[in-house]
Length: 233
Length: 232
Image (cartoon, rainbow over all chains, first blue to last red; front, side, top):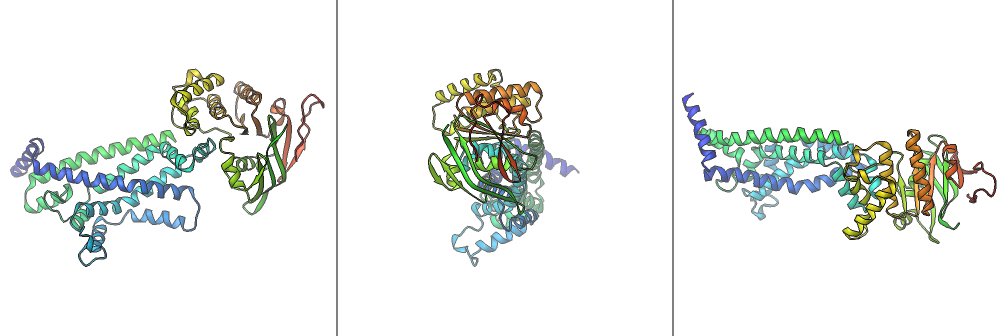
């Protein structure tokens, strides 16, 4: 109990004393996950819009597929990225394994189905008259699409937050694709896993607190934006 | 009155049944035409086809003297023909932004847009609402914003889909006044309604949509009192 209290006190000291190693880990986490979500989002929004507004063969299968893919374990995505980018893998020559780009690719794959599924729900719930009004007032399709994005912005923001929440806290994919290299690919979840196995609880608790605050904040924002989405529709 | 658009041999099938089978539909300049028919007769579908929102099975369109496909006509008629839903959709932004929406796509300067929007706000008598979010407005106010938003684009044809449905008498009167003003501005209007007698005083012609085809109807006025347009 004493050691746990001491570790907790030390974790606060680490957090608020500006410990460089700790903050590099936090920075890595955010840098990788924010880039992943920013790259994935535009493609996810377009895919979700097309699924919601066009009728084509295989559409229902696509919707069901993206919905099912949300439950793919992070470690399986990590394994796939590992196999693809490992020396003997099809893209081994790119030398991306155990780099931040590999982590970003893994997190894009992980967040994409969730982003598509949630933004599809937002587009599906949008009033069809929004698109039609935009078109009848002279907007070209891409402009009408941007207008529609604005109309369902709360739903899409909720999708972004949920997608970010999914990847900021995952361990499996980051560990396998990034390799947990100190100062480069070590992020919050992989650092917590490592420090805990080493018995170095202070850094693990400090990072855990950051994740916890982040999770609470994201969920609060998610509830807020989902509420706004319902109210504005 | 000269013809703006002509639709020839317009066919539309919905769920395997022929909904529209129209030999000729002409829209003339400065004319207000009522389009009546029972619920489900295809009034809205016809208007949506004219507006470019729904594709027909087949049709030949003549616009500005040129015969073209429906798709090509839709591109050519962009902003010349504006469709207003039965319950107009207003974007989740201010009244001013809603009215300026179409103008922002025409390459005008901010000053020009601002001046046109001010004029449109005054025209619709909604200057006091300009900074309000359009979603917060009442049904009648929304209708006025939608009319102002359409008028600002100087359309040649306005397609109104039951514009006074579910309105109280005051809002209905207001809407009729705006339709009259638009007509006076030279806008041609095709007005779908299932209560012709309510809009009879606004109309120059009356077409009834029955069993998929259009049938010219008397508008119940003495000859000479109103210019009757030959349709169909």
